[in-house]
Length: 361
Ligand code: SF4
Ligand code: FES
Image 1: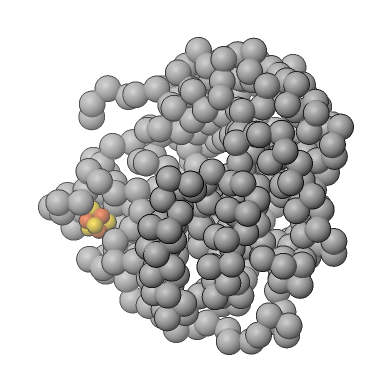
Image 2: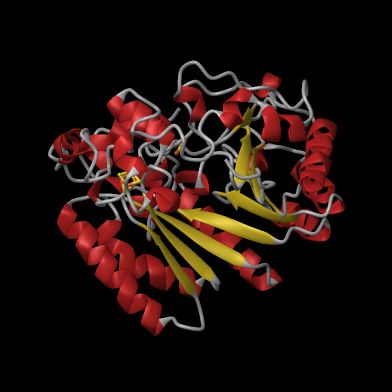
């Protein structure tokens, strides 16, 4: 294997607490309680270690990071460490006073989630009455402040047909970028897979919409598209390759190569309160487990895409094929591709009004 590069980005899951109850939540089935969360100074130390390690971009996430009362102090600590700070939020809990404080402490960028283009859809998906209106108020405040904004539109069977309106809304809110992210099935989202899986026709229409919108919004708003895994012929290069570009820190300081890594049996994950972050990144068994491509099966070893997708997602290989070393079952060459095709055939056609989501409570 070649030399291990330093990480570029770090996702800090400050808390698992969240006012929304989205059925597509990718957080683990067992959420960490608030009394396990790291205190402010422990996070500040992690930010300093991360910057020393080479991390450039910090994504503050959750749950809902605004559930942390010390959010502005955490932003300040990250900026003091020299990190570019992006806040990933639903907007709920961000009052004018809190936005003032975040701005004063040097917040660089906001990524605001969008559950739907109107209150009827968004509040039904988020399981939070009044959430859409509050989110719009926060979005307007962010625009007034001139803070760079990305809208993260989470798309699935029940809102993908409204993609043109979602793109138009992001532009109206002054977003510089919209990430059209089709639901990926990890964590809690697996419980709602049949209800959320879009149809092939919806996905094809969405691709055409994105292409057209890229032309019409050129120079004004960047449009990124994360298609649904299961309809693809080849897998995504998850995390840009295991342990190669980024790392996640759970609310209690557990360091993870990706958000679903704890679903892979046999791996143990150190806490940054017990070991220096650099030791965990360069030497821990968990990060070494799937670095590079040596462990991949023969179909990947002989494939021209091996160094582009690294065999896809380890956690998806585990979840669907029961083997974290297998080629991602999304791959058309995988002996497990039939599993994915069977799941695609299991979609639930119930309309949004009657579908029974398992909400994340
Ligand atoms: Fe990727 Fe392996 Fe499939 Fe090739 S065979 S496309 S390397 S998952
Ligand atoms: Fe873990 Fe893809 S989510 S490797």
